[in-house]
Length: 251
Ligand SMILES: Nc1ncnc2c1ncn2[C@@H]1O[C@H](COP(=O)(O)OP(=O)(O)OP(=O)(O)O)[C@@H](O)[C@H]1O
Image (cartoon, rainbow, N blue to C red):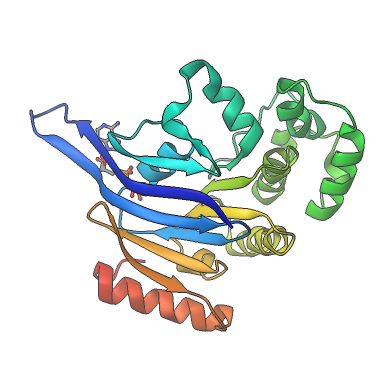
């Protein structure tokens, strides 16, 4: 079943230096089924963050539509956007974005507190923290944790509300290879548990965990690669080939 529909999305920015507009997205069109793990790749400036920000309702498209199930995001009123994000979306960023004044536990509880939906929070936390391997970190503060541990906490905060869609922007970008691999394995298990994930990344290795990779170029979906029966290693080679052939060798 389709969870997300991105229909003929266009986004123009006014340029500060000239009257000419920047066309960040020209005609982006794709669908995401429930339970899919999708990576979005493309050269710097190809529009990946713009696309993610539009889906996250943090930016408004110039034309086209984004539907999450039946909800057309264009119909949401500004005053309802924060609640929509809280109720339907989870976010994982490169820089973790945890609040240093709150313990790990309270960082993870935050979306539930904001939604005034704290019933059963201890049980939800216990299940999630076990899954994420952070049960013994719950009373610590973010500045006491390694980058990999902080990203686990950020994933906990993103998942505690059981969002329909998890949006990730370079989630392994600030991590060393061991911690990046651990985080990617976590995404794999979330995916196996049915979580739908959309991840922007420059990393072929990160993208090789996805079931489908969308390559963005010149404001459009230029190419798609399905994992199918490929192993992670075979997918990695296929992604690197695609990057070399289609995008001019960037990875
Ligand atoms: N607020 C803005 N105002 C004007 N132009 C913008 C704005 N945000 C992005 N752009 C332009 O839109 C295009 C797409 O930018 P975007 O940040 O989406 O690319 P990206 O693929 O995420 O790049 P990177 O991989 O470097 O993060 C670029 O040409 C960029 O300069």
